[in-house]
Every structure is written in structure tokens, then in C-alpha cells.
Length: 471
Image (tube, rainbow, N blue to C red; front, top):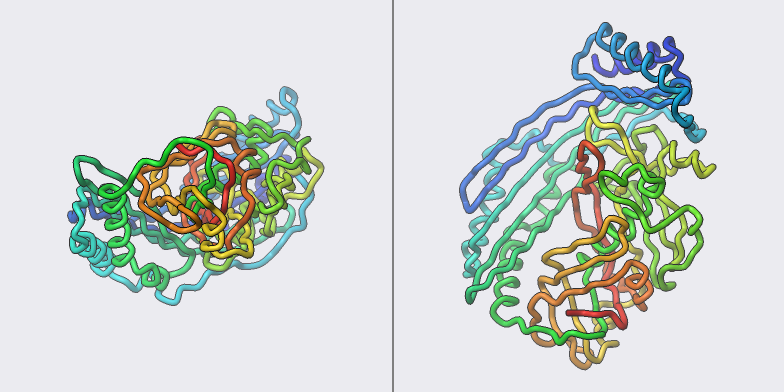
């Protein structure tokens, strides 16, 4: 690959200009997106992009540049300019240090059983058309039907001045839907997403037509038969989709070390956690939250991060106690640690920053039925319609979509949009039991400036919360 050779060249030039460290990442991505809006094909995107991102450390100052022009002359001029800038800046800023890491040489290739490149645009659009037909056949007044199908293949060649050389090729497929159902002068909306790393074999597994009919009919039932739940303190069983968004927003984001040290304050907010709180209890012993990019065919899969550090499972909250943060090499050095491989970028022209991958709560030993049986009066929130959380990831709110009253240990009548408002410590402290029905769902996690929407999984089992306020 021409770009791969230029990445090697960029590292050499950076060292000639006095860089104590340099990484160069060539990336080439081919992506396709198909959109069906109320049955009408509205947008098809066919995109190919490639370029090189270069990060270097000179005199204790860290800089990043990128280009999509593949010439040695362009690379040399660009590095010369930033090297001069970093040299001038080094005396005015606090010195940046990177953690010491073992260099790796290897490959990371995800295979496709059904190669996305073998399917025509007509075949991919037909997938959305079948979903549209299923919605129309549901018998429900689905006034808004926004369906998208996307696929991409990203190839990378990462080299560093320390000897790392990694080539990767990761294909991803995803399906998004945004539905609006109307009945009795009211309406409800649902947005959700499915995604995997791999080929179109996963698209077939999702069984989207059946999924669309279930979603539409469930929303209709909630609208036409749902009752308001009396406000007050009660017990609540949250389904895996609700657990997943809770964990991602309040059990993943606040553990990003760059956010903890203030780098994200102006863009994505801060964290209620500080380095001194490692080991502190903020949840019950039933709660363990991990982030694991090594899960095969997961949407957030990778074997090596964008600094060349080998990926591993991170335990963020262990039996209710703060255990570790998500680190890149810079934040790890601030705490005297090794990086745990959490540095990711969405494209060649974006600097890699601390990111989640597949963040989820570990399952327990109970069935969902057993969790429900332990409640005399309460709420079952199977999934949600909307959520929000504050900048420090402390105060949060979840509005239910498919919800039911629990009466004497059994699922009773539908409920209309019960809402849980709670703080993060109160949330995790209120969980007294976790189900064994672990589910993982796809998401696009936004962070950074410019914004980087990156592929992740969020998940967990059904969980039981005691003494929480539902309105």
C-alpha cells in the first residue's frame, strides 16, 4: 500500500526533526449507506476516503497532523512545520509524558462469511424494503419510518518509532431505525441500532422484518392500553437495553481518564470521579462493569488500539467499587500506570482519544422471571424511549417505552412512559440482583472536537432496583 509506505517514511522524518516519539497511521475506508424514509429511498452514500494521521512528541509537547495527499514532499513539509511549532511551544507548556509500552508487530483481520462487497446496491436496498413492508403489514399506524443500513471496511497500517507495526482490516455492518407510532391522538417514538464487526451474515441474523413488527405493535399497545404508574418510591426491573444505556452513560463515560483529568470538559463534560476515589464503593456487590474490545465480532471490536497497545478487558466497577479507568498512554503516565489500550480514532484525520469499546454489566444468576417474582408492586421497564444525563455523569433520567406494572410478582397491565430519575451512586447502590440474560446492543458513541462517533456495544442483563423514585 502506498499509504503504508508513507507512514513508515513519516516516522523516519519525524525522528530526523528531533521527535522522541512518533506514530503514523495510514487508514483507508470504504463505506456505503442506504436510507429509506417512509418507504422512499432518500439517500445512498458511497464513500471512499484515505489518508495518514501523524502524532509526534518533541521537547515534551505533543502534536497531531494529517493529510490525504500521498507524497513524500507533502509529508516532509507538514512534519517540518509542526516540529518547529512544537519546539517553540515546549518551553511554555507542561511536559507531556507517555507510558512505557511493549511494541507489537502483527495483524488484526476480521473475516466475512458473506462479503459485503459481493452484494449489489439493489440487494442492500431490498433489505430495507422488506423491513418497510413488515411495518406496513403490522396493522399499526406507523406515521414515521426512518430506516438505514450501512456497511464499511476500514484498513489501517500503524507504525511507531518504538518498533510497532500493525496492519488491521475490520468490516462493520449496522442497521438503525427510528419509528413513530400514533394512536388516540398520541404518539411514541423508538430509536435503536444493531451492529457487528463482520459481514452480511449478521444482517441476516437480525431478522429485521420480525423485529419491526414487534416494535410497532408494542408501541401501539403502550399507547392504547398503557396506564400511568402512581408516583413514588418503588422497585423496578430494567431490561438489558435499559441496563446497557445506563452502563454506557454513567458507568463508562465517567471512567474515561481524559475526562477525569479535564481534557473533555469543554466538549463532552467532566466526571464525578477523581483518581483518589479508586477503591471507593459507589454500588452494591451485585454490580461489576467491564469494557472489553476483544469480544469476537462485536461492534466495538479491536485487538490493538490506535497507539499500538494490545487491547484487554478493563474492570471499571468491581462488585460496587471503583476499580480502574480507561487510559491512553498520556493519561496512564499521569497515574504512573501502563495504558490499558483505550485510545481510538474514528478516522485518519482525527486524533485518537480515550474511548469506550464494548461496555457492559456482568450477568448474575437469576432469570428475569425470578427478579420479577421478588417484587410485590413495581415496574418492569423492558426498553426506553429517551434518556439524558448531566455533564458530570451524576444525575440521569430514563423514560420507558415498553413497560408494565408488576403486581404480586407477576407482569400485569402496560404502563405509559414511567420515568426513573436517579444519581449514579444511588443507581448502582439500589441494584440488589442481576439476571443471567446478558444482551449486547450496538451504539455510536459521540465524543471529541471535532466530534467522533465511534462504534461500540452497550449491554448487560436485566437488573432489579430497590427503593427508587418512579414518576
